Image (tube, rainbow, N blue to C red; front, top):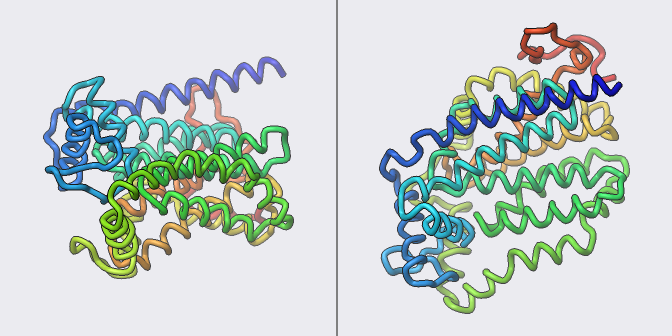
Length: 376
């Protein structure tokens, strides 16, 4: 038993090192050699530079005018990066790249903890090597940091559903991560975990007890302590201008109308999903079929089934929520990519006990739905 435990530990360490090498190379290599592009990177870079120069840590400014497109945390982090690396392209993008690496390791940890090897390897590779992830990890935009926090929140919520002495700790992490997500990109940082975990609760037999584990009184208090002070300060400093710019224009109007000509049909995110998650999108039918079986058979008392169903709710929730938004961008779908990677990395149940021979790659689930009676 001790030998097997040591072997599993070495295997997991090796997988983490492989994923660190692959993701670190893809996300950090020559990160600062190209100039800032699009409209967002220069705006974040300049706003953080003005914050560094003026010392105004409450209201971000772009060319001297308040900029209420996003909350404050990303500006704070870039300003901190400027202090360490100087005002450079690398400093602007470093937090996205770091968040990308941490996100890959987090997803691999969740896959390995729930399914065991080799799910952690395949989930990590699926998240690292799809088409969209490296693009966002190498750009000074908020999407990677947002996705790291909402993924942390959802996975912490799943751990909190376990009956253990650490339930309150995981619930606290859930609420803390949602608070940080609210400081990165606003209410969507709360909406996505609610869609994923709320959807899962609908499939649980003891849903009210599960809900109570997710919402101890300390959780909302921690959320409020982390997220609300800045909102109060910026509202006091700017009044109606903040309400109009941040809440009305960049949240209500962005969802109900079209901002900056970023429109699209209701099926806009279908090609984004297929192309953005390529080459792993071919495995999605089998992965979603397996998750659907877990929900249909209502075997969500097991951690494996809970993760599968939560990931399905996560993907569907993000896809549907943003499909009905008036303003559409490919990056809006990215918070669902960790769930897609977990679904792809989850081994088929009949392969779970199959051990690869020495020198062979671990078995990967087939892109086709498995035959048989379903989950056992």
